[in-house]
Length: 268
Image (cartoon, rainbow, N blue to C red; front, side):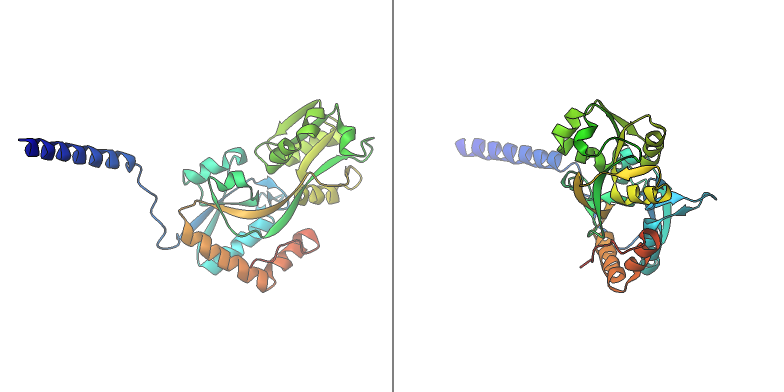
C-alpha cells in the first residue's frame, strides 16, 4: 500500500513538473534564420544629413543610403528604406516593421540589450554647437542657458552621462531631429545644440558664418547597423560585406564623397 502511494505521489509530482516546464517554455524562442530575406527593409530618420536625408526632389540620399544600397547589391537582396519615428526605432525593429536600423546608429551597451549590432564602421563624437556670434566659449559658459538636442538620439545618453553639465543648464529642449534644433539655434530660440559630430560638421559647412563648434567632446562613439538578435545569418553576412567594402576602398570612396575625407573605421 505504501509503495502504491509513493508511486502515485511520484506520478503526480512528475506531471506537475511537466506542466511547469511547459509553462516556462510557453514563450517559444525565435527561430534562427536559414536564408536571407528577398527584401531588407531599413528603418531610418530621413532628416539626418549627411547619413540619410532627402534632396530638393524628395529623393533619399546620404552616406548610409549609398552604403546600404551597395551592401544590398553584394548580398543579392533588394533594399527598401522606410522612415520611422527614431525615438521608437527599437520597437519598429522588434515588431518587424523594419529589418535593420541603418542611419548613424550609435552602438551602446544599453541598446545591445535589445538589438544586435554589426561591426562598427564609423567613428562619431558628441559636440556642442553655438552661434558664431555667441559669447559662449566653453561648455561651462552654457550654465543657466537652454540646450537643444534630438529626442531618442545618443546625444541624450551623452548628456545624461555628463550629469554636472546637464544640471548646470536652465533647460534642455528636445526636438524631432537635429535639423530643427539647429534652426532654432540659428534664430536664437536656444543657446546651443548637443549633436553628432558627423551631422553637426556637415551642417556647419553649409552655413559656416552661422555656427561654431566648441572645443572638446561630450563623448566618443561608433556607428553600427542594428538588427534583431535572432537574425544571425543576416548579421554575419552583413559583417562580411562591410569587411569587403572596407578592404576594397568602397567605404573610403563614399566617405570622401560625403565628408571630404575618410572617417570610416577599418572593418575586420
